[in-house]
Length: 310
Image (tube, rainbow, N blue to C red; front, top):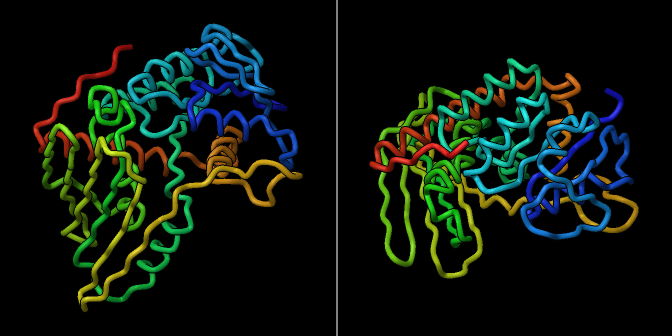
């Protein structure tokens, strides 16, 4: 195909960034066109055409769908897009459970199209710095911790909509998976404490490189900034710590950024997979492995999340 026709589902914060970046006409070597966006809200966005779902799925000039909606709507939108032969980029997670995630990748393979899960946290300089530091250590890693604090947003605290604390925050599991070499990462424990004002979810993990890994997610009703800390302790007592920055979008204005923001970097990876210049197999393996780990953690917590309605 000469140009990739793209439609964005969802016009919230992430969706609007995607619409703006994909629709920017000053990006060098642009091989795509923004066909429009789909939103359940009656809104207008400058430079973008609002489409119906039927138009997005049926139009021949639309080859790709970018999904930026709530977690529990991902499966339905992705399944419909894949059935119509559209490539899909979806904000993580792909779906709210491991079974649906695997089915969707199988359907993408059957249709000969790409299903790509976004995870811009893995593109931040803070994450890359931690990866480089851990790759250079000679001492064994004896303990690892990742902590995430933030506030409720209207659906992240609703586990039936979000898929559970380690589904909506599967990026934490994926971070460990990438940092420690994909070495048989598995869930060993999980605990969920919920009150009227907040919840705290704790996961215990193990892999070949480190047997003592802890992920903690705390969300509160009280408005608070999103903060993440990654900390690893070596056998000699050395502590390696990073506080990854909040992922940035492509800057606005001017003649166009010299370097794209992280959302655009992710989109370019998606385009590379569609064009056949990037092998999607490693990312797919990470997605499938980590969503299963999330499901295992939830099982150890005694948290059962029903499958999204399709």
